[in-house]
Length: 218
Image 1 (cartoon, one colour):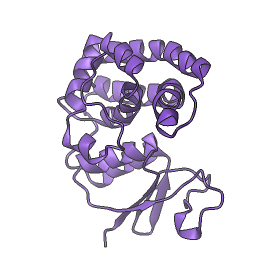
Image 2: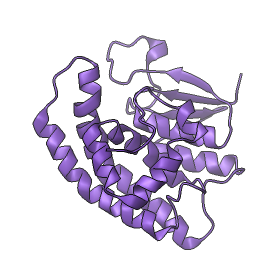
Image 3: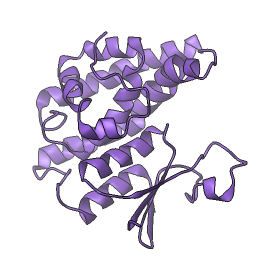
């Protein structure tokens, strides 16, 4: 039995963020699948998260939730290999990318484009075309901001992994699963170059939820 236990929901992009960090650091852990969307879940299928969300990490008797907090904890508690850059500007850009993802990226990239354009059709449900279109429109500013960061080269290079990569990759994987999402991504050369490298990493294959498209082609 491992000291680390992750409670998560496999379709969750935030669960995948934590799984990517664990994979990039080569950490063994026990995984417990819970469903935060099922109010009738049995005790063993309920998340211990106080707000009924995922992920939650246990390290021995220490419990921690909120994805960014989990990522920072894992990188500090298990410092090799480090996913946090030393250079102040790179550190700032890493934090900026994570904030962009959480504040502006998650909803249009995942909840609108992926959910409406990929997940719902795969589940036999109808797409809300208005929501899908709104997500594509809102994604433009997000992708432009990330393109600027990738062009600058402090993070999102695809060569030196950081927590920024781990937080962004599940969102882009979801977004790029939709053909129009891939087309929007392809219009950003630096971000596409990053994605073509990152999407083929072993950690991405290990955490694939079944929707990944390896190369960001329109």
